[in-house]
Length: 458
Ligand code: CO
Figure: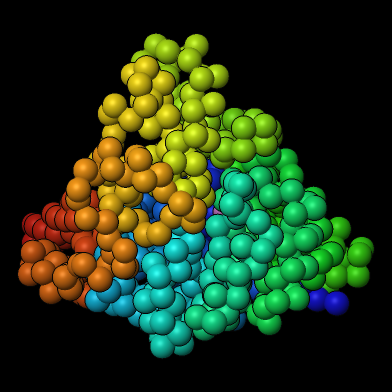
């Protein structure tokens, strides 16, 4: 029996443990070894990598992708895409979504994992369609969460819908690490029964369940699991590649991974991990197990945000009330999965409700937009009372929000002008206008400095 492992070192492990701050030069020398190790794919792009390249690392994310592709000739390269939000934080018009997906594939991506934070599949249909047309492997992801309206059946329905949309595989995406081994077993079994596509399981070690969860998922017949090379595994990252490989091998599940190369990869990253620990980029907090998320059924990151918000307002003693208010706000909003951006919206509103001593006295513009339907359809029923109170008579968007957006690519191209030198540059600008513009300007300054220098030398 076979099982495949996707290595998350370059994207999710990098993002979850060290805030996506690993520069290309740190991992470029090991890429050819990673290419030979036998991974199902290398998750290496998308998510926060794009923003981080431009904002913090002074790197062109497209150039990074092309460089990875140059060194990785055999293994599939994988990215994470937030549906209509692409790699940004708002909904983009369809022309930008299509162009971005196409360019991602042209520059080297093979597998695109696509999800929507509300599991509103209308928000991923354009990206899925374009990825298929561009010849990519499309992995439709369902965001796993728990609530009175989410069930095994509702997730199986989502899986069937992803299959019907033309996805090539289905991923269970447990961003908070709250999926238990038992649920993983049941959910993978149910999906295998009702969906004819390969099933992929993605979780995080945050609450300490992940290795057990992946093992039970494998027992139930999961086709692929996500792991991270051991020195960048555990905590908020994924379970260790090598340990999962050994455990699975003993059970008769062949990962196809080469143990000698896994060791070589881990030995390569160890000094980088040590350096990150020393500089404080990697903190022991993200590497340990945090079980509060299981008690409160909210993601660890959200909990620490609540604590930070209350501390800032000198009101940490109100935490128990906020923890009681949080599920009530979530219920009012129709039980969105607690993932970016809904986790921040729900948390901030719960804090506001408690501190004001009155519910929904102050409502954020994000919650207003959510109630207007700008993020998509809530999984459950949104409180009509709340909607009336916040929106008054304002109309609610019932259709797909992106249908209300005008095409944007040409506008962006005109705005950024000569600073952009390629269609890829225009897309970087479309996603992160301020950050990309700064990056282009710096690139230009650097070049003119080099020119001046060579003239002087001549
Ligand atoms: Co993840």
